[in-house]
Length: 145
Image 1 (tube, rainbow, N blue to C red):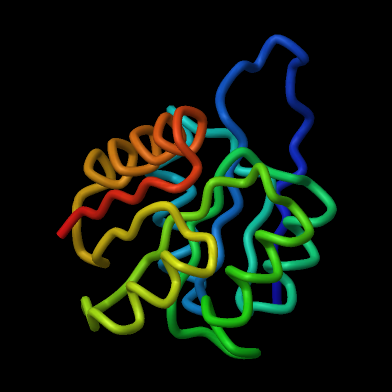
Image 2 (cartoon, rainbow, N blue to C red):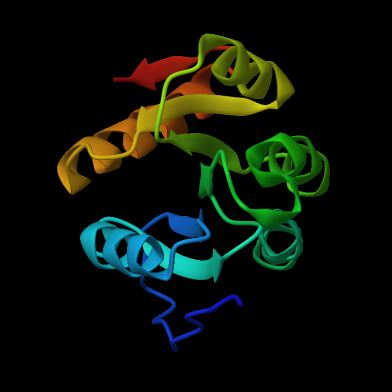
């Protein structure tokens, strides 16, 4: 299931909004806790379908999307989120760096990728850099190993 942390937020909260999509509840909770200082998590999804719905509803500044989840994973979510929320900066979360999958997802609309297991600080850096890249040059890509 999905969890949408729609906690009341101050209108003065200037943190970028973030959607987290991963089928592991522990990973979603850990990422939410690690990224909460820099990002305002507006939704969490356990599958591609819910990720797409939440992206369309919230139009987050950024989305962290796991490659392998039910309902097609990032291969389904990335192109559909790019269509329904084109300003969302998508970063792929992957347990491995299969070059063809990473390149496919970057071509489909993702801006960067990050490997599972890196620190929360590294994920924050990748998301922040990806947001800058998306704002400056939508065609550019960046990755963190």
